Image 1 (cartoon, rainbow, N blue to C red):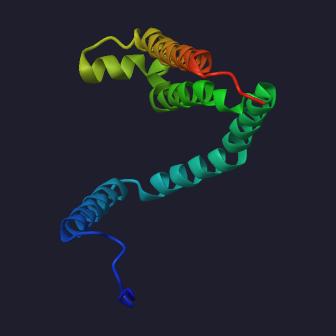
Image 2 (spheres, rainbow, N blue to C red):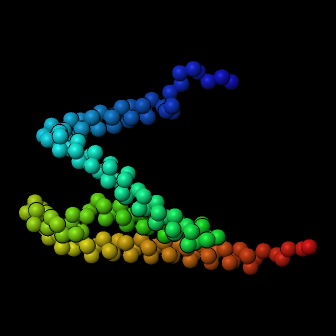
Length: 156
């Protein structure tokens, strides 16, 4: 059966409607964001892209390559370090001004709350992420050991 020549890459009219609504919302947010200081916002985006592409990407690519090399023949175990590290660094990137304590006075005046616990909470979340990953890794090892004990010996 031949596909139509101009088939849409989405499955249903509801998906098209949701996609159009998300584009409209993103467009509205972009107009509101650029209404004040459009040059500063554009400069920030370009700077962030350059910082990511020229500095951060080579750093975490090299770190990941070193982790895979250190794992040797156990490359499947790298994900148990890679995932919590990525999530922890993403949280650090998003909440860095509050974690580092750079904007505690501004945060306190805007919200009426103290910002001194963000670093401890980030460390706690990081510990939970790595602890959960370690538990999943141990469960996987136990399951593999049980499977190898139950397997009958190979007949030659």
